[in-house]
Structures are given as structure tokens and as C-alpha cells.
Length: 144
Image (tube, rainbow, N blue to C red; front, side):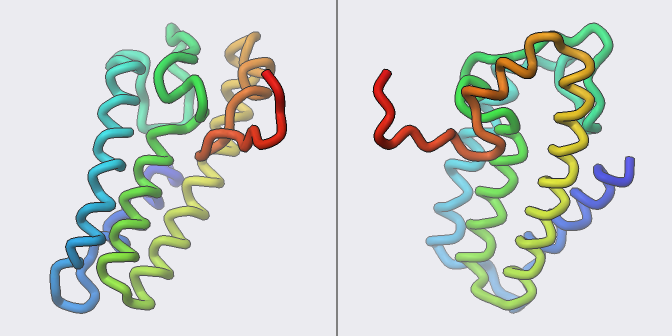
């Protein structure tokens, strides 16, 4: 529960208009890919399988389609894209520090979730080898 509270506090700090003004158009434009990735992730990981806490659903199943084909934590990635849009849009030190705080919280939460997913899903170890944490793995120079 600590991870969830920390995540929402950090997210609120990132979105807070520290300068007293709305973010620039560039910042708000950065929110579009965030929204798209979040909706795509929710579409592939239907309610009932999705949880805010980093604990796998007892009857859940491992999702490896859609954005999960490339990234193990696309919902966290969507929050980081949102934060990047806020940081670019506000261009203040508090928004930058809040974005870094959000990244640290999501990284810690994802590490904990990874441990639990490894214990819950027998195929999770193999699934991890072809996917990235928050970004797709770099495949430069690799032949398929």
C-alpha cells in the first residue's frame, strides 16, 4: 500500500502547476501518447486482471499481448510519459524533481512487482527476457 500512496503523491506533485500556470502546448501534447498507452494497456489487461497494488491477482493471467509484448510495465510507462509532458510543459525545478521522484517510486514498485510475478507465474522468467521494464528493449544490431 505504501507504493500506491507514494505513487499517487508523486503523480500529484508532478501534475501540480508549480509556476501557477498551465503547461505549455508541448507539455500537453506529451500527454497524448501517455493516454494512448494507458488505454491500450487497460484494453489488453482487462479489469479483473488489473490491479493498482503490485500484487498479482490470485486468478489473474499473464498478459503478453499489446503493449505487454514489448514492455512489462506499460501502465507505469504511461505515467512516466505523462510526467515527462508535465516536466517539459512546466519547465520548473519542482516539476523536474517530482518527475524524478515518480520515476524512483515506480521503479521500486516495479521491482517488487517483478518478484511477486516471478513467484506467481511460471512463465514470467521467460517473458522477461524479451521485454523491457518501462521501454522496449533496444534491438539495434540484432538479427531476427
